[in-house]
Length: 162
Image (cartoon, rainbow, N blue to C red; front, top):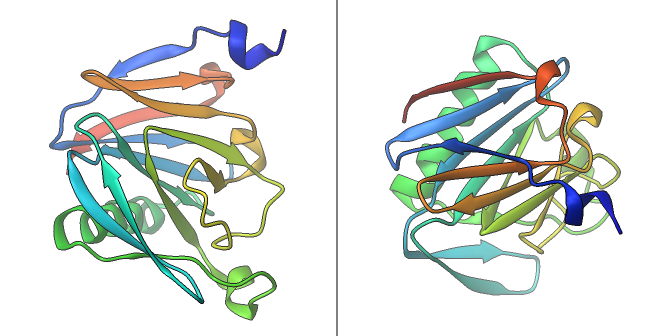
């Protein structure tokens, strides 16, 4: 049996007007409730409509840990959720992929993978992240966020108003 199926994880209460930050050694993960809505994913060839439910999430992964990165994650999540900015997916081997400082996913569940190129995956259940978050599963649950496959003793957990 894989660890993900046996790890009950930890659930952290998160309201719609809050952002949950997971601050590690090299990166930051920011998570907000998406709420019920329609969002757009833009790829090189298509526009994909994505529908979210009340407890689905927007998850941003930032490659850095300073206060500018934390504020950038808040701003990015605000742009996507409140302004309706589309999620952009770059083609494989696009030169901008290596310059991305943060990436965003949307949906009920996000799996962090440090072995993928940032910004190149239209699948919204996988997101590039720093090594310390590799394998972590983030799931939207009623009233909060469930975190699995992560040693939270090495992570600074913060919440603030969106």
